[in-house]
Image (cartoon, rainbow, N blue to C red; front, top):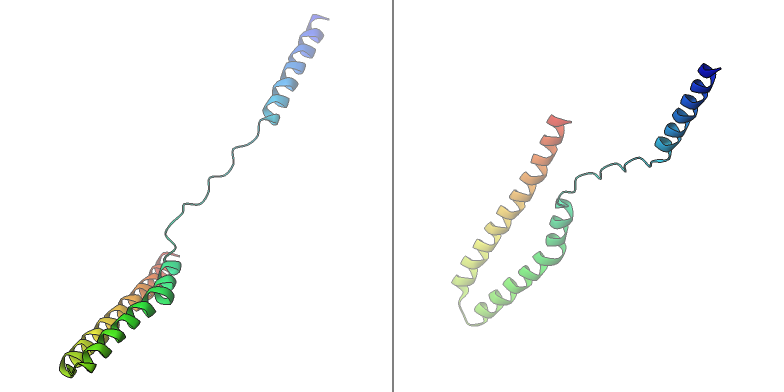
Length: 106
């Protein structure tokens, strides 16, 4: 008889413990690490900043050309075109590098 009472007490204690453990909410999964949205940044610069800079360069070139400084305009234009080529090359290398990293590590 004592064994039955001990067994009932133990089983009721185990049931209460299991119920308490089951009612504890599980921890939420950790969010994925956030990085910099590089595509958004590049898109922003390409759509918003680059046209403004080109417009400013155009105004400067037109102002110099109207004053008769054609040689300075041509030199500045060549420098600006080379600069844009470097920027385009850097963006291309950025995307090619991203592609190569994805290719190698995934």
